Length: 167
Image 1: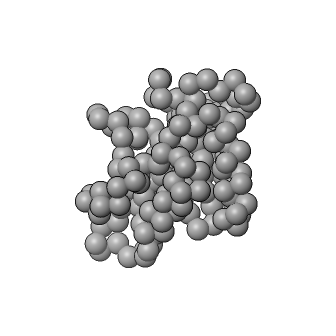
Image 2 (image 1 turned 90 degrees about the vertical axis):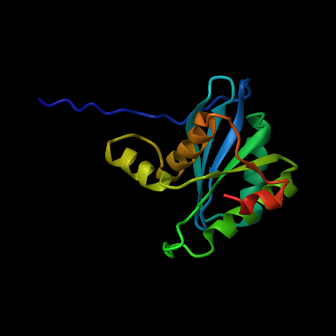
Image 3 (image 1 turned 180 degrees about the horizontal axis):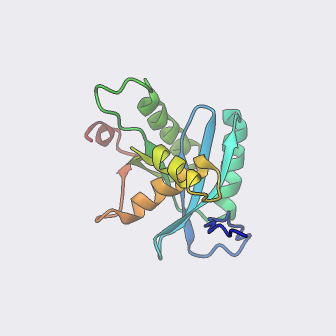
């Protein structure tokens, strides 16, 4: 009998006991939006869930509930920073920036942008290596973990639109 070594990253359900869990990571996509939750104190991110094909109104209603129930103080949105020769995702950077601004306005939440290059590929690799979890939520986890792992933690704040163009 062969045993497989299957690593698991479980979705977390902290209910109302979410002390310390205060950062939400979002992998923005037109059809799918992956979410991850993280703890600023221990700098660890975990996949939370993915929303598939929701209207903006439904997504923002669900996002308000998550922000409230997890006591989120910061939202980190991944922005696809593409090379000039990469034309496979035209306009996605602008869409993600617009989406982040909308979060900032609708939820009055602090939002920061971080480079999400290679997170989709890394999440796909995690899935191939038998890590449990939705690929989009895993991407959000990687985005959030990259935010935590930066030498000087912090992305570009959404409140300063000029900073978005200076990558």
